[in-house]
Image (tube, rainbow, N blue to C red; front, side):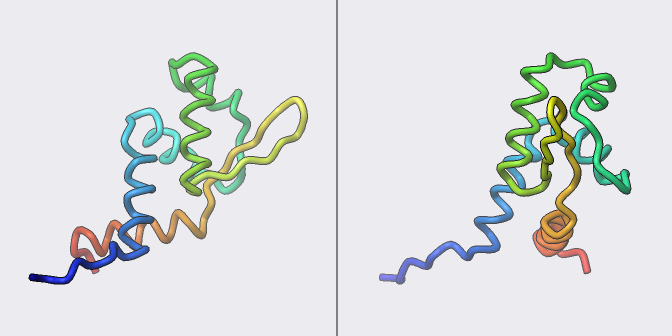
Length: 101
């Protein structure tokens, strides 16, 4: 009988990133934030995407949980930006998954 293997940590991390990117609104948010050199306020994102504030908040929460996005609280606003380190890691894992060098 074959011995069962542990799932590697990089595979687990890729699954977390994939889950975060599993909704079109979150992919759109990631695209916008990745194009920016600085952070932006959630209100700016809200103005651009036709979703409710609470829905946007949930999407941002999911992205933040995955580590792809980070937020800074500057009452009464929250600024969001791409977590460049994790973004680069996600790109690398995707490239590896799809066999891109």
